[in-house]
Image (spheres, rainbow, N blue to C red):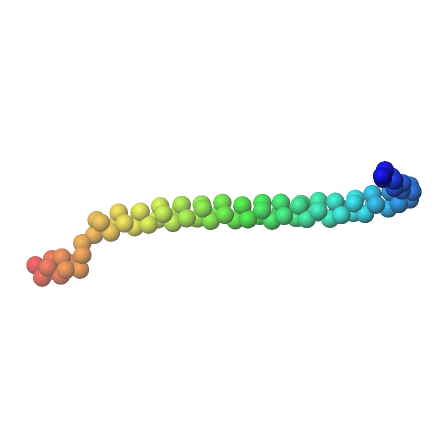
Length: 81
């Protein structure tokens, strides 16, 4: 048994194409919005990474400074002298 081919009127095809076009436009707009959000998050993460790097340097500096100082018990002995 042979299948009959369904033919569509030009108006039906035009309406279908308009529907598809509107849905593709919505997807494209969503994609653009998501890309902007990802860019914003990337900038924030980069900023945080820089801040963490600065904090690490500050902590290393503080550690070195503390190594050059004496403890309370040694200070008490020196004070008694």
